[in-house]
Figure (cartoon, helix red, strand yellow):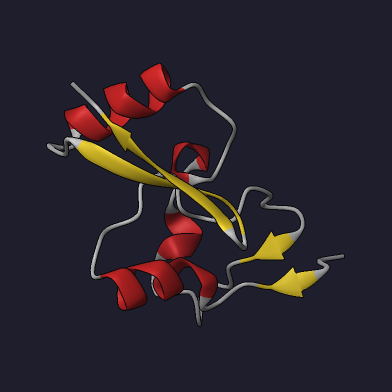
Length: 86
């Protein structure tokens, strides 16, 4: 059974920051349900869209592929850092 339903979490950061998310879906499909009827299409995203631990080099490869040069890494509620990808 799911611990929680996550229908708004993927919209939170983009709404506040006016920036897209890369790897921004909740990390666990098993612990955080994105229902078909309420998840704004996120239910169909594959696991590559989910948050996961990765090196800055891996993150930069992904954000550069999408046309970005920087990323803000959210590591916790009060912990974030900016990564500049060259």
